Image (cartoon, rainbow, N blue to C red; front, side, top):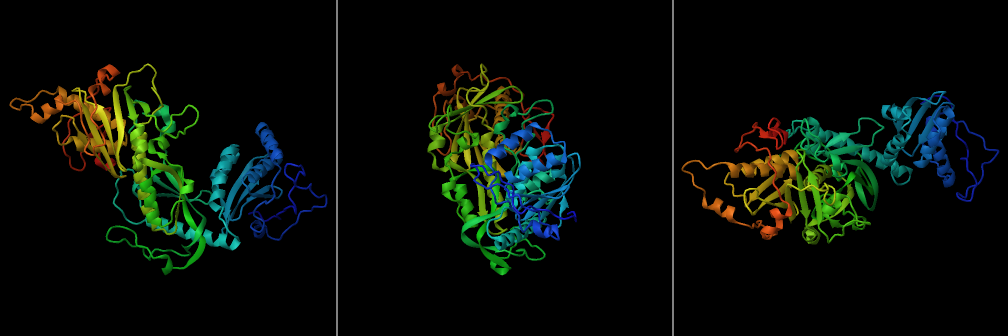
Length: 591
C-alpha cells in the first residue's frame, strides 16, 4: 500500500432526499489523517449508510454513456461499484480503496483515468498484485469487474461480530490447506488428461485459489467435450447451448447455522498425511485438534446448482449429519429441472409428456419422448436444485464430491436427450423415435424400434457411479456377447445417449445385413426376436407396445448410417471406433 496519508471523510456524502431519508452533508465536515493507512482500513470496513437509490440509478445511467477519460471519472466509477457491493470507499490523491470486513482492494490511478496497479489484501496479509482485476479495469470491462468483485466479496462476507469473523476466516483457511494436502496424495490416474483426471476423479477435485483475488473454488465434474464433435463437423448441441451442462464447481465459504459446530483451528491431517487400506485420507476428529465451537458451518456453494433426486439429498445428510433445509428446495420431476424451464406462460405442466428433437453431427435427427406419467409419478425421480451443501470437516469433502459426480453423470446423460421443445426442426422427419423411462434412482431405459424388424428393443443404462456406467441391450436379436461391453464403452466415453444409440443402430443394421456363414443356421432365439413385436425391460416398468406405437406410418424412417466395425472383449489399450468417423479412435484410458 502507498505510504501516503489515507484521507477518509468523517461522514459519507448524502443527498438528503425523501427516498433515502438521510441528512445533507455538513459544511464543517473535515477529513481526518491517520498515521498508518493500513491500520484504519479494517477499522471502518463498510459504508453502513444507504445511498439514495434514485441518485445511484441516475449516476449508473450517466456513467454508462460517458467514457472514462479522467482520474475523477474513474474514481466515480469505482465508488459506484463499491456502493453496489455494499463496500466502503476511500481515496488518496491517486489511490482508491474498496474495503470490506476481511479484505480490501487497492487501485492506483493514472492522471488520464488509466489504472497503474491493482492489489488485493486479505486480512492479516500484505497486498498482492491482481492481474485479472487490473486487465478488467484497463479494458473498461466494469460489469465483469463488478461480478468478479462480488464473488470475492461473497467469499469474505463472513457472518458474526469481529471476533467471530476472524475465527471463521482462520478456520476456512485451515480447511483449504487440508484440501490442498489431500489433493497431493498419490492416486491411480483414470484419465489421460491430468486436469480432467483431477477434476473428475481427484479426492478434493481441482482446487482453484492460486491468487488472493480468486475465491476458493473446487471444480469437481466436467462432461466430455469431444464426444459431440468431429474434426470437420459442428458440436452436437451447438444449437442448444443453453442445455449443455457446464463444468460443475463449488465455492468454499462459511455460513450461519442454527446449531453450534466444532470447526477446526488447525490442520486435521496427521503429519505426514496418510491413506487407509482403502485409499482414503486419514483424518483426526475435530476434538483431537484445536477447534472452536461456533454457530456456523462450512458451505459448498454449487455453481451452477445441481438437480438432485430425493435419495441423493438424503445421502448428503448422512455424510455431513447436517440436513439441507427442505424449505429451500423446490421439488419437481428430474427432467423438468434439467431443462431449466418452469411452468410459466407457454410451458408444459408436469402432467404432459415432453418431446425433444436432438440433431446429430451427421444431420440425423432423434426424437426423445419423456413420459410425464413415468417421471412425474415416480417418487425416486422427484428432484430439487441444490445450490448449497453445509459441512463441518474436511473428511466430508471427498464423499460429497463423489456423490455430486454421481448425480452429475446421471444428469449429463439425461440432458443429452434434451433439445429444443417441440419438433425442433420444422418439416424434418426424425430418423429414430425413442422413449426414455426411469427404472430406478440410478438407471433408465431407452426404447426404440429395431431397424431390422417390426419390433422394439430396449437399452438399459445403469449409472453405478460417475466412473462406472453399464449398458444392457434387450430384444435386439443379436447374439454377440460383446455388444453390451461396446455400448458401455461408447456411453462412458461420450456421455451421450444419442451418440450411443447412433452407434447401436449402426450395429443392428450391420448385423441384419450380414449373411449367415455356411453351416450356421439362425438360432431359435434370433428367430423369435425377429418375429416379436413387443419387449419388456427386466424391471417391468416398460410395458409392451403395439407395432403402431413407433411404426413407419409415424415417420420412423431409418436412414442409412455408417456401419461400425465389430469389436470383441478387449484388453487395456485396445481402441474403439468413433460412432461418426472410422478414423477417430479412443482408448479405455480416455474413459
